[in-house]
Length: 295
Image 1: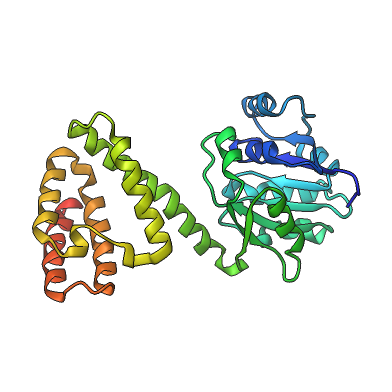
Image 2 (image 1 turned 90 degrees about the horizontal axis):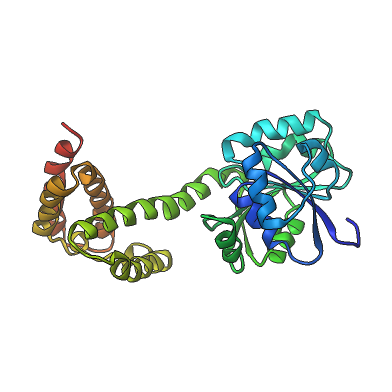
């Protein structure tokens, strides 16, 4: 690599790519961007200023570090096109940020002489400003060919993050965990917000933010031991009342509540819930789940 600033190309100017471009520290110089869609490229320019727009192959050929910030399902096609276009510059390093894919997704580029790694930032990117602000201190799931992760770990550190090595074969399980922690948490919290609004609470965030954040922190640190609430206590009557209320207020959410409660019950049993109390909750859920699924 050059002793001067490392030349960087972004292929995929969406929220992730724009956030990473904004977060590049000194020692890295953005030289090109490539992507489909004029709107995405225009938004990228709004955040980064004038950056040469090139074809993916031209952008990659001009860079020492190529960041592939495209969606998981689009990655294979982009990589194949770049390999066929002979876009790998000698000694270049290539990173993709697709959470569910490992370094193996970049094998065609590695065969062409590139150093490759999968580096997934474990944060959400609602917009480029917020995304960039969340990168300092963030964890990254890093997968690289055996013995070749050093430069990728260094890149993550340069972006202010902490690298966690994930084996190639464990990549889907890793991403499943990240998706549940992010997307499932958002969906459940949005459901709770709707219920509070329906209960006449004008500012649901004031109630939800503290309990949700402390619950997530506790579960991340202690697992099932952090579980609280009616299922953990074995309060079958309260669980039944919740289901009755949902049948009136949000019937489409009854199945979600029943399935999540069944999952929580399994953790509660492992955490030491009395067997008789657990069976009482299980009976309520068994009665509710066929109805919730339209059975």
